[in-house]
Length: 350
Ligand code: 5AD
Ligand code: FES
Image (cartoon, rainbow, N blue to C red; front, side, top):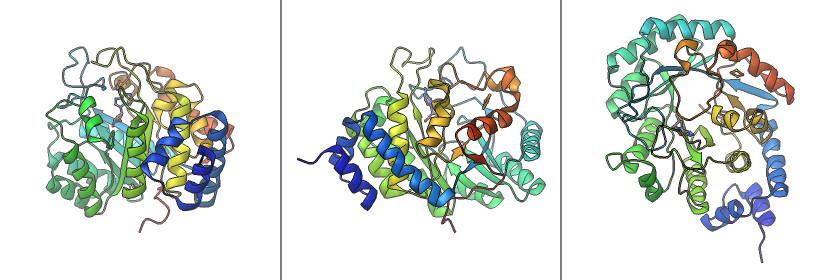
């Protein structure tokens, strides 16, 4: 009989497994296999990125959203969510402050808010590029048309984050209302890649109803699609959503999956996410030790941070978090890694 350790070794040699083998790994998670996976993961992390950690400055510029995902705190039907939009000037100010702090990637993230026209998104992107030609502008504004994606790319955006959330269409249907389409989302990812963006996909770990088989499908998707970046974090419940009473994902499963993703695709950009830092006080540090190589501190004005609450107890939303950069610098150093001032492309991206 083949055991999970043998399967892990096979993955480390071949960077590919069958769905059943991925599922077996996930079902047999234990401290020993987690440590073994983390050891393999750190070999690749070191080989491609040394002890360097890339940063992305995150500007959460609007929490208006036309979507109604069951898990998300800024969903359309959350009437208790206080809404805000940052102006072009506000956003540029965040980007400038970030530049001074050493960030060479700015991520403009928001709900699907069509109050920002394509023209205004393009204006914001090109203004940032004009002020800082050595900064990569990443967009994370959801599902838009191919024409829109092309326009943003022309304006200077070079990366796009759009988590697929789950690679199983059946599970996708458990997390999203009928009006949202799995096929459309996956199609957006393919279009973004065709246009020439560095693309970030990703999924929530242990979202309500998710099985080991569903997670195996996510790993298979990562193996086949090979997104330049893969953002994963535990599902965390939010009081004002239909999933208020659902259990959150675990630190252990998230760390194990981070290691597996690093082994599947050794050059991938892998963030230690805010959600991981929320379920454990040292979650992001542990994420780096499991194979992650990116951190994404918040650059949004502290006055709006509490309003961008996708899940309960999100860290870095209080006044003490005015300067996440310094905080993260110390945290990253505490586990032997080093934040670098670098645009932070995926190794091998041409
Ligand atoms: N718990 C964890 N992650 C969440 N996201 C949204 N809501 C939650 C939640 N309740 C993630 C989604 C989304 C990203 C911006 O945040 O994966 O793509
Ligand atoms: Fe934001 Fe520590 S990283 S407060």
